[in-house]
Image 1 (cartoon, rainbow, N blue to C red):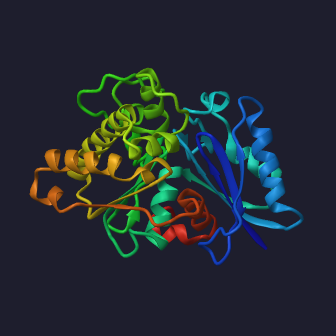
Image 2: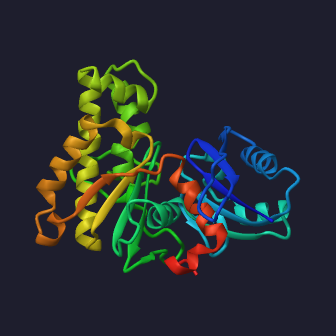
Length: 301
């Protein structure tokens, strides 16, 4: 019997076999193509499954999603932006498998709650800051899902002072200001010559003024968003993962400064913000937890 986990990201698909209910040691990845997106995802799943009988599959997807209908509509995947019936497609591929589906932020929260910084913490916020920005909420020991499964979508908290258009159709979302892709886009508009968030962070550490300004801008917006979330949710810890979150002091110092400025209530001042220690794809780990059946205890039923 084999359990699979699938992570549908903004730019990559990742999948692997779940071991011990919480581990995905051998991760396979493929870029999200501009077209024939399902073909790429399907091929990855078949590669990972091989000849093994698949009993369960956990799917964590960039949002928005509708867990009631099994539809994903990631903003950064144009071919799927209007909605793709991912659960039905995966079920057709593996007819006898039990399929569990959640937004990536809920999977992120599950991973941190089971094996990461939120283990034993009853109230916490899990975030990913990468190509996009997502999040999940642990409230009173349970993952919050919401009406359609999109609870915790912190990337679309509106931050003050930023009128940047967002792919969601709104203006001023923290994802439009502070994600890796958005920060690179802004830096290039200012004359920076690089291409990736990793390069931007490296340039900032080397003292490049545009790169430093881009990370300061992103960190400030993140701090503002976290302060708003802390006031709303009354959490103990915010744990942040994702590739762009690894940018170090040029991102984290302005983020902490903005958080200190805006989180002025007594209970929000106690919030701790930490870097995730899950290094092999927290969303995929959470999807594995989801598939393996541990989700009921965390409120995913």
